[in-house]
Amino acid sequence: MVRVGILVMARNKEEFMLKNEVHRLKIVKRYLENEGHEIVTSKMMKSNQEDLEKEMKEMTDIHKLDLILTIGGIGFRESDIVPEATKNIIHREANSLMQGISCFCLQISRKSLLNRGVAGIRNKTLIVNFPEDNKLLIFILDFALETILRGIKMIKSDKSF
Image (tube, rainbow, N blue to C red):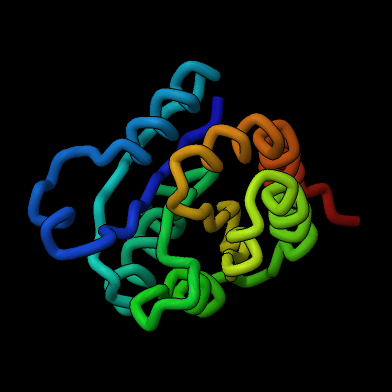
């Protein structure tokens, strides 16, 4: 079982004000819970880089989660700040993980070329940026979850010389 935090970037002010679980959050929560993982926290966030960095640091440093998934905020809009926030707080990049996810997504949608998501490790937490497309979320989880879990296992069982 993996302890997970999910951060969803609100598409607009109206969506943020609703404060309900948006469909893309429900999809990911249900999928991970059905796989036996614990959703420790999930949150809808405004596009504010400082707040996002603070939230991810809290999830890694205080709650010591195994995995943080961000949903949305990785495109070309000025408000898409998730990759920058993630890069600012990670200690090590996990480029191949994102490259694999990106290559997979391109088989489904050419719009994936416009995603700038990153993945990386902070302390013992893996952080992965997912796109906001509901359809892609399930495909990505089907494709990448096993590898993500293997990566988390490697992070947790670091046996240095």
